[in-house]
Length: 253
Image (cartoon, rainbow, N blue to C red; front, side, top):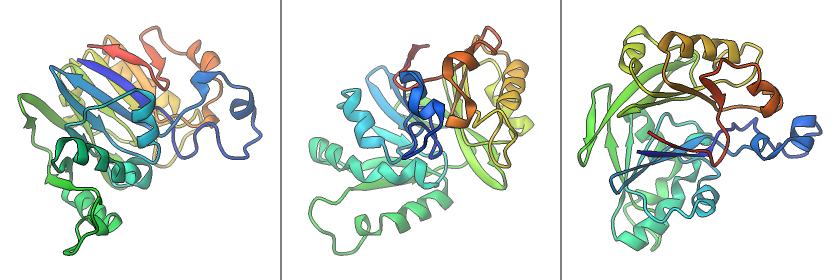
């Protein structure tokens, strides 16, 4: 399985419009992050986890020409705003794009993209096949997807385990049952917004604590804001098996 980090940032990410901070103005390419999502390739199947406002550019940048479905972690705009751009795949493959999400998030997608679900629709609008999921494992073709429920302050969000890869973003609390589902993963990705505590996201020390408890072969931090500091400096502070992810990083599992 091949995983490409299309984005590892947040709406507080880098570069921030008109932000004069050193990370935004002096950072390396690893400090310039688009909104968080990953693209997964497995035996000819191509899936995305989330489709934020940078979705179209991210796909063009990585020359991604196939997409078989989108897994949604939650319905905040920085994770669904790019769904309109599946229309290119609708045109190429003559099929509606499967969107897998909690019923609550499907309702939000219907509201946000009401023109795509209208009784009378304009030609060329995106076509979605919304597929409700819950906490139960499900399959896309022969690939098992295991949901990873967690909390984003008081809001339930989903991560996903696919084989030996677990991905969980926008959380500040992982229940014991979800930790058990993640156990044994070779690669685990968890969010950390900054070093200081935050009410709805893990801070760096909390993400490290979770990864040290789960102890994968490799742990990665995503959903990083410019408040985290410079990539190269933070990387030196991390345990050997934990790394800050960065845009366009590709890993094989």
